[in-house]
Length: 140
Image (cartoon, helix red, strand yellow):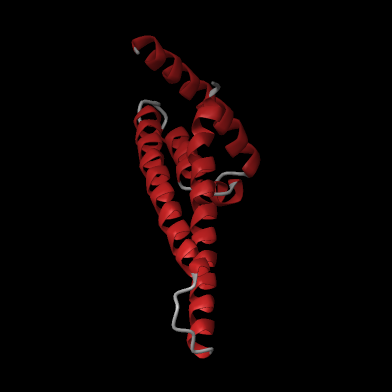
């Protein structure tokens, strides 16, 4: 696995978690709408669809919690590798990009560099990260 692939794990997992949270919110809205429709139509029996929806919400929340645990583990490991890079600027670039999900423009503005210079520093940071990643894999 390359340095960029390794670092991108956190970013991708973060997007996946957000997507699942959005889906759960839609399910909750759907379950609430079904429940309120039932109340308005004066049905006394519980709707099996609503129950299945609530069960699905519970399942998804368990999945989300497991993904969050993985995300925390990955971020912790990435952070420990990034902290081994000598250049503080490179540490900031990798942290802001891969852990804080900042755009290249935001990172350039933060560091008062051009976007092109950020790209050059990012390339160097990836090389330095790759060396650390290889050294750590030798220890495992």
